[in-house]
Image (tube, rainbow, N blue to C red; front, side):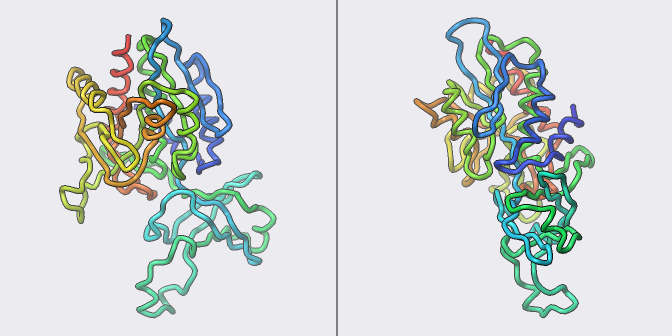
Length: 344
């Protein structure tokens, strides 16, 4: 497994609308893998492998580049940075975090905390309160000088490295740099196979704020088949009843059947299942009652497309401790590669 690529993808900062560093990394990594690479006005990266013949079906893999984060919305006279979220945060996970403030002139280390009294001088009632996301601020340690270094609109991400523990990979931004990794590694493993279809691997922008890049990219491509690649919940952990588990880690790639934005094509799901069975690739069906994914954008573009989701079950989503099982990630890569190879 190319863990160095996954580490580089996860540790490269890029929130919605600010995916340029991730995009540049992908451009460099995919040199020579595709016949055509272009960037659209929304900042999505379109990578195309041409088919051998004419009138070939278009298969679109949608892999969003952005991670959840923040934009600087105000800088106080004392240099404290106030933020607006871009993406969904649970404020219970934001206490005492190390962050990276990304500016046009370089990155600054900082710490994130909520306003209010520390435990030594707070009341019992104070300690029961969970602050709103907007109550958190960043301290860069620069004091008033922060106003000279940071601008409104600069972005902030969590500052944590990727680590491997046991059979698991833990990092911030596995949602959805996993998909970027899969989009690259599946094509790399395919070598020169799968030329019976025109394959568009699109690294999309701004998914975390409403599938924005995927919508415009899908209207451009107008695929026959869309495969939204993403993480999904793996709630096989204490405190969650079995019927809400969604996926179990180590049980294989997830065939994502639905969420609140799309319903998968039944025949396409069965085709994926057959390919998984024929190639001894472990898989599990999965659904979410809420949430959206880039599959929906492909399904609803122009006259529509047949779609399915390929998902990797992830514990602790939208935190700095997102965790996947390495074998599930490998199963997702192998299924994508086998499906594309079967197009010959």
